Image: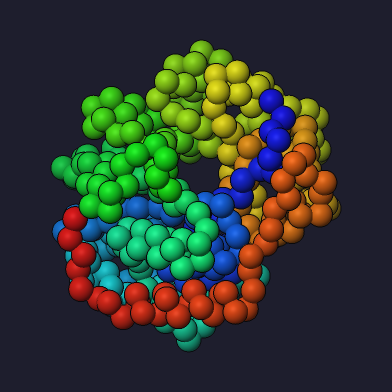
Length: 351
């Protein structure tokens, strides 16, 4: 099912160039021209939706320094144990390895830089996207990953209900609205559609079962039967990119799996994750992208480097529509000015 349009580009956690998921990183992803900006949300102690990838704080903040003794028995400090007011006091930095301090992505923004970033809330991310859409007269979308619904349920918190209530407050309820929900817990997507009656678009994330991201059986859901099972609930699958191709023992591409074809047969788009230029083990990142576009036939790329993929797409002959990279220093400075104003609004935002 070769598309007549270029693949969509999803800015994973915003971009790789600033500390992940901060408003600055989200704004930079927007400025680079990402069709969607992907964020993750967890709940705080006082049920505020915090934009953060992990359910703990140690990899991206100075929480151990700010709140000594607030860790759990595993040594980690969990988002759910802190209020929004407490979380806003933290300084956010580039991702490091907990207890070690080694920067996870060494070539990225220095984790020891003396620049202040802080955690965002879902409300702020929504307002940033909607404000930029209005100011730039463009339509970009927010892809919201609900982190570990089962974990939140164990703490008597219905994170999906709170996400939907927050979106409803902005009148973001329809299939055509510029927000999409995704999660690794595929049964939660069924719950959102059938029990919470959401009309929003839903994407099903898939990874290896051994990762223990959720109780969902991804071996089943990436079979033809499994794809058919969820095709009436979701509009797309977002699998780990290795599910779409076969490799030889040296890591060379051998061919494609059936997953993309099965998904397209059921009318589902395919957005694999995560394409990272700085972690690519091969010699030619563009050839890798080209294979996924023209041979695997993906509908988009979830990437830490939306600018790199957009530049690649711009160089290739389009089937009918050429992409454009909208990043410029003027645009980015304008967006940062908007973000700066948001940074200084520190009152708790209630759902």
